[in-house]
Length: 139
Image 1: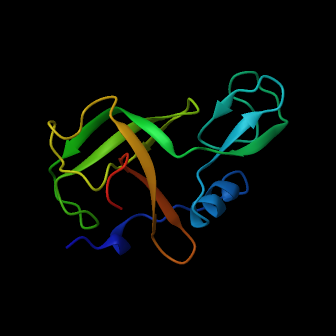
Image 2: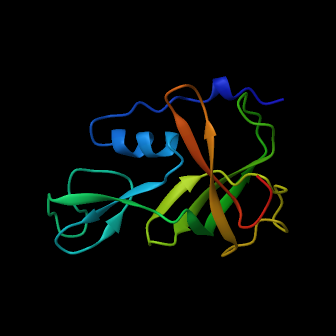
């Protein structure tokens, strides 16, 4: 059985604290530029498209598609193998790295462009990680 306590624990910074507060509350939070309206991830204090420093935090839908992945077969103390390391494209446009869960870890089951939805799993009292699972699947 996987031991999630073996996962590296993210360390929130002033720029990322809102993201981790959101995941803990069950919300996937992104940022949007107040000037050019670009929505982006990962969090940062300025727009990566135009450099504007006035940005807002927006709630994402939690919907995504599978953009790319690899299936890792090497042992890791925090994961039952094999497990996927994936890039998903959020409905709002940004891409993020994650793991795909609640699905068989095979190329037949992990189809590019498949519909996904966020699934939050607490790592400890302070950090909740966003994973993605097939849309409409069991939680």
